[in-house]
Image 1 (tube, one colour):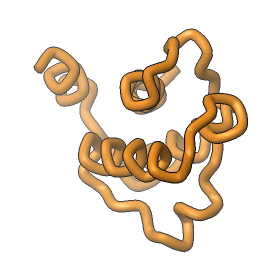
Image 2 (cartoon, one colour):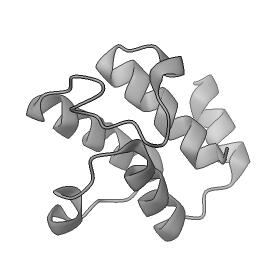
Image 3 (cartoon, one colour):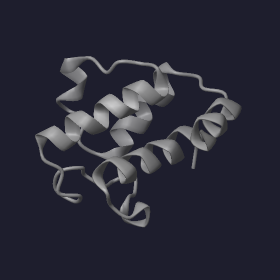
Length: 90
């Protein structure tokens, strides 16, 4: 699992208050984790802040699974692993 995938999983678990073990790439935020629209927005804001990138509204509407977020951030952002480790430790 990539560093981006791991951090995405951690942030989703923290934001939604769910067990990280329940989250897989195929996990749907709403259907599987019970997130409502405010939960989804909060999750997206935290992910955008973490990775320093904004998800365009037209893409955001189609992003429902954990893997959608991981793929997006892996595609647009090359994040050094040491930056993720530093952020996690903070």
